[in-house]
Length: 166
Image 1 (cartoon, rainbow, N blue to C red):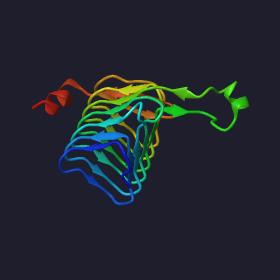
Image 2 (image 1 turned 180 degrees about the horizontal axis):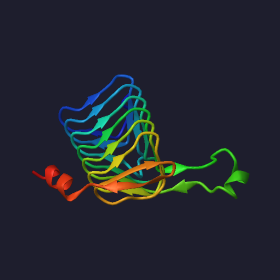
Image 3 (image 1 turned 30 degrees about the vertical axis):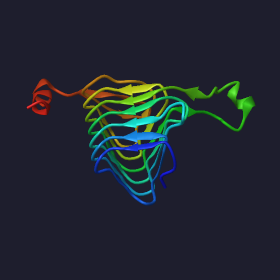
């Protein structure tokens, strides 16, 4: 379902079961089944060109700015959030305060299946996030990360980086 404050580029494909709201989506982006991508009037979510959102992905940009670069690929069952915490319990919030913060994913980043990305995370360009990872800190360009919590596995080699830019 498409609701309000939507700016779509050319050749954007949104499955009929998906929901988008308060978002700008660049050209040639595809959103698969049961995906939810939303910002807020204060923080409209930004999606670049040529992105792919796999089934059952949630990108929540209600609490802070979420920016997704160009050519970003999401596998299935991903959860990206700009706010997280025990919303129903003010008592629990005394110990576990609600986290709110921006999320930024650089161009050509690839997010594996069932990844969770928390508030205040920035991933550089050409990053790879292994399936089932919990990402709660930022990583620079060319990082391959994985785990719970995510850690740097390695960076792309100079030879690999050269292939990216041929």
